[in-house]
Length: 461
Image (cartoon, rainbow, N blue to C red; front, side):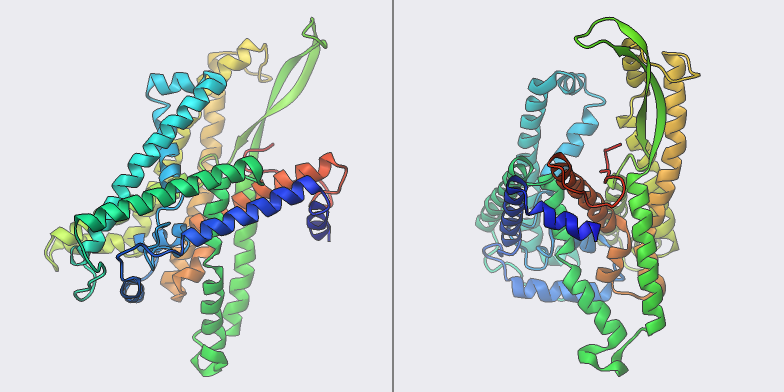
């Protein structure tokens, strides 16, 4: 009841109500962009081929990953196929390069001016990625036989340089427009615009997942004789889904609080007196969904290239096929890559030495640990331990959909909501958005969404 009362109170605040309606309207515009077919593409033929490819695959491949993140734009090759992802990719690249390129690292420390310059560099990189990716898509559509698609499909009506240029202009413009809409949501709406657009793209497949589950357990058109699963299996899956969601929420919100003693300062920056204890929250899932996003393409793309340029039945071709399909070899390599990228991301983004120096400059310290080098070693040790726990939890959540697809033969569109990037993004973005809405409610003396305590976002304490 507290949750429903919180939503009811949200519409009683004029400012928050306006933000919610702005967010819904802009998200609707983004969904329209993802439904407009690219000019010159026979999207009916493309949709037929995609359905045939899905039937022949076991799910969880690179095609399914594109379908998840584009919100169904892949099946009709919409101009919004790239969506917000070139912008997200540019942000990730700049964030990683900021740890190794001194100029970018300096901009990160230059305050608002530096952030504006980094944002400008990110936008230029986004345009470059849009052009490269859209040109690659246009080339692939013009030569579908090179992708190993079944039969001899003719997806593009008039292939050639003109089609390529038109596709680049349409997809690049649409992606930049979505990027602009995401900025407007962040500025005038509720929550982070880019994250919300990704979440909406993922949840847009929910009706299709519900329909597929209904056919599996209740039969086609209500004919129980065509049902493939039992009611017992359905009850077990519902209970298992609730457990997975609970585990995902715990993983997303879990923090390790490191006690920090800081000097109390008089009002106006006067002399210090006494000590106060605060906490440094170290997130258990510090990496978010980055390891899963990195690991999947590293397996699928090289495997597809090897299968394309090797002879069918050769040892190398068979090896690549085993890696591409979700068997034991694929799962083992997938697990190794997820754990590797979990520690790699923490190593590049978590700077224990810089944190210890900042604590020392502020006359703060961790009880029982000497300031300086010993503090850096302590923080690094603590972060390594919780990264192991967070990486293990992330690994379990990532493997659940593949196991359900492989063992129970559940349709991938249903299994993907039981874990992986889909569930992690939905839970994380939902918590962040609700936390922002709750802050508006609490400021105006309304009850929050929880009867006791308050929501904590992914980066909150």
